[in-house]
Length: 170
Image (cartoon, helix red, strand yellow):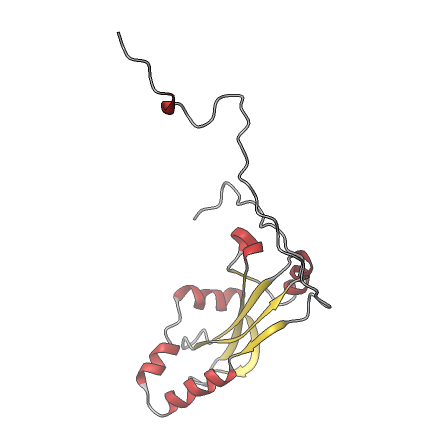
């Protein structure tokens, strides 16, 4: 006679039983924000950019290769989603720079790390409590890239991230 099976062999969920939801931690207190669409905690990387350009002008090949090794995805993003600027490229002087804007934040959930256009940011500022914006300047011709600016937007009211869609690939 066979021995009875141990109950651990069963699936973790019995048919007809509702799954238990994970215990959610309470959200932090809301931050007082006067204007959600106004950038705060701004970091300007202009001095770092100037330093890198001075090193390149002095003949530092490491600095040149460090700032001209743009990822192919960044170049593609600059060509298709970048916002053109009036500034010429500091290295090749031929092409004009393009700004690529990325958004990151816990409240964005699976949408964190996406490229956004500047007109979309004020709308997002009222939809999310807090997220960080990174602006990268890229020359699609020679590959120059440098982080230009980062800042925080949002209305200060913490929210839970949206659920990850089932069809989202990792």
